Image 1 (spheres, rainbow, N blue to C red):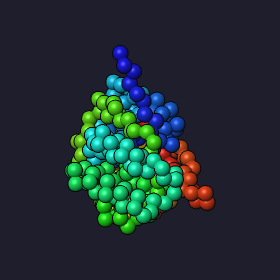
Image 2 (image 1 turned 135 degrees about the vertical axis):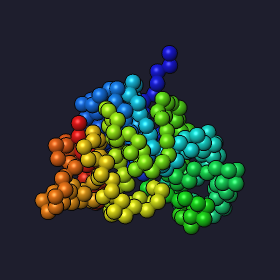
Image 3 (image 1 turned 30 degrees about the horizontal axis):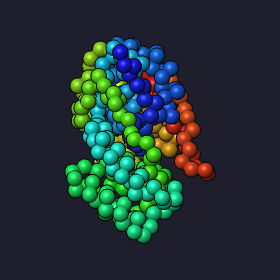
Image 4 (image 1 turned 90 degrees about the vertical axis):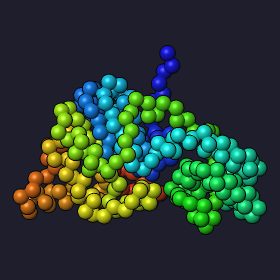
Length: 275
């Protein structure tokens, strides 16, 4: 019997995936039921859902793929073929150097051909042609960007990543209402961070949106992810002391991790969970 691969990071690039938090997430998860229903309200790359299913095979896991990550996974063969061609085009070009002149035109024409064929995974290709953490979401953007030869040298492997996981794509509020009154349910709550780059997420999030999310933490079992840049924890403490409302984080456990943006900038990632 073939051993199922356990991914420690999302198989395709995704901004905000929780790969660096898995060291804290896994032991915390052991405090929950192995047969619970885990609802990943903001599924993102699906890494939290995959990790839960890997640790608790008998659990029911619902992954809300609101960013259509599944479509990128389904087209990985086409993406790998494109990257193979780019490696050939840039075979004699210096690694990590700016792509200029005729070679740049050849690269862009190859991307244009891929787009016309019906599908181009802009985010994955961005990680191979743009400076670190930059993303283009159209051919027009690619033509305006400075390209670099940082093409991945091996193909992406996504086999089995979402195996036995239920995938939906609906508003998190609708998904929450569907499961909030059921027994033995744990919510995974990882919304786009307030005051953090969110260009690769679908839609635009305002302060009201972040505050609305806190309602899913009321009298539920959950994992909630935020950062010190959002000041959400301090806001909830203020609300508790100044209004009749309660603090949704009372009685919860907190884990932190330093996230580095570049050589002179960092912030604190925060995981709060209630059993």
